[in-house]
Every structure is written in structure tokens, then in C-alpha cells.
Image 1: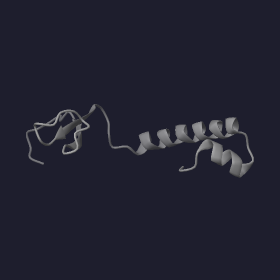
Image 2 (image 1 turned 90 degrees about the vertical axis):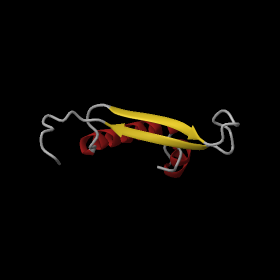
Image 3 (image 1 turned 60 degrees about the vertical axis):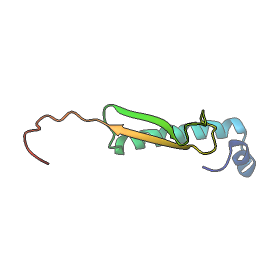
Image 4 (image 1 turned 135 degrees about the horizontal axis):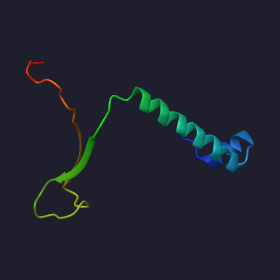
Length: 83
């Protein structure tokens, strides 16, 4: 949905309030579908960091590279055999 609610309202000759209601319903359906097919179950940890020159400080430093990490942990019931 690259189209804003006001643009959609103009294109379809519907009020912005009605379009917003439709968008909310669509977003809820998308969330339900994503949760059903997602392979993420349990605890998921997200983090971000910056790498680069030590002299520059803060996120806005031009020479720093911003990275994003994702870690998924799972309880293993039996670790006696090799996977």
C-alpha cells in the first residue's frame, strides 16, 4: 500500500474516515496472516549498533556503519544427538 489514505479517498470517491477504517481492517488481517505463517515462536531479541571510527561519536557520525541484529533462541529438549 504505497498510496496514502487521502490519495485513496480521492481516487475512490470515499471519505478519508472510511478509507482509514478499511486500512485498519486490512492491517489487522495482514498481522493475523503473518502470525500464522511466521516461524518465530517464543523470545526473539533485536539489537542495533554502530561500527566505525572511534573519534566520531553518536549515530549521526558519517563514517559509522549502522548494523541490525536478530537472535532467535529455542529450548532444545534433547541435545544428546548431533543435528
